Length: 180
Image (cartoon, rainbow, N blue to C red; front, side):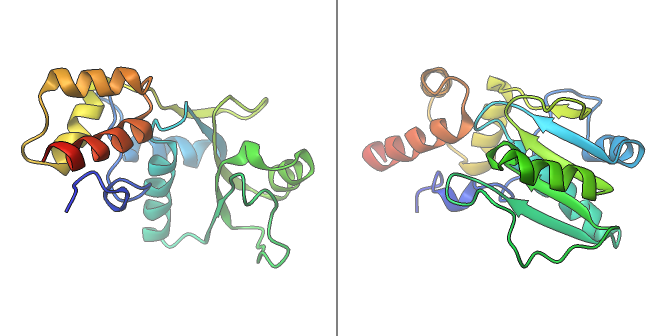
């Protein structure tokens, strides 16, 4: 089986790797408690969704009422049958995919809201900025396979992907299929 298959690296399948030593899920949760409406900002494939899902798990473990919403090119509207409770925490992946009216609806009806976006949303504090780092990419690869390709190969794949982990993993999948 190919260790770079998407089932091993889709959001939530791996733990988020912080590149700062003093950062953790715990420190982010402390910030979320102080600032209940915030955003995770970063480029495509940098771990925003993975981080959001880890925060969601921690919220659920503490007994919080959580609603997870994921928006993309196929799903761009809030479901009409969405159960809404004023005290729910909304974890919204792909917030910028929503029309402005839906963004405003969520923003002003929710007491607790954590968003993922590529560019910062005005007037929403930034909880965390994901930044592609080769060292983090290496850590992730080492979680997936015990004998990875040479570091020079990984660096080339990473750079060709422009730091987008998702794109790099697709290329590693193809590499693994052809070379191994």
